Length: 170
Image 1 (cartoon, rainbow, N blue to C red):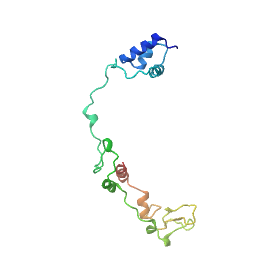
Image 2 (cartoon, rainbow, N blue to C red):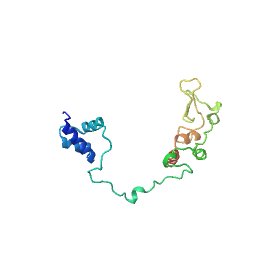
Image 3 (cartoon, rainbow, N blue to C red):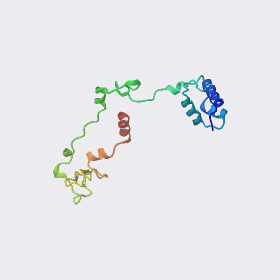
Image 4 (spheres, helix red, strand yellow):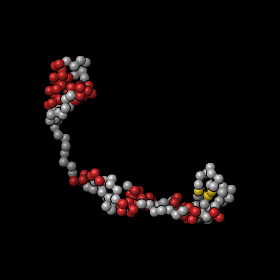
């Protein structure tokens, strides 16, 4: 398809009247929307006039603007250009509690190797399995689980606790 002077002038006229690229392509015939956009760009035509399409914007119902029910996050802003600004006090409140050192939970005397595991000892793996220092917790298990009381708390978190942690980390 060749862009003749007549077609270019029609393109300019329709563009300044506010027609969309798809509408112009349909009126010109034999060109695609993308061809119209490319020609407009090459001609350096900027901003269209008022659109010929009727406005489809509607007033939103009051329900559309109801805030999401989220827990109070203290002084952390959630809107505008300060939404990601870090507040040290708020960060301290959101910081996870430090976990006790694993050596406090599994003393050397309680360490279990793969050869000494039984149904009565905690099977929580500690360390890298390829290292010579790898071992299992070795404390007495809680009934019905393969872990000691400390590792049961790590392995099995109630659903409510997981949801609260997820909300706090947002």
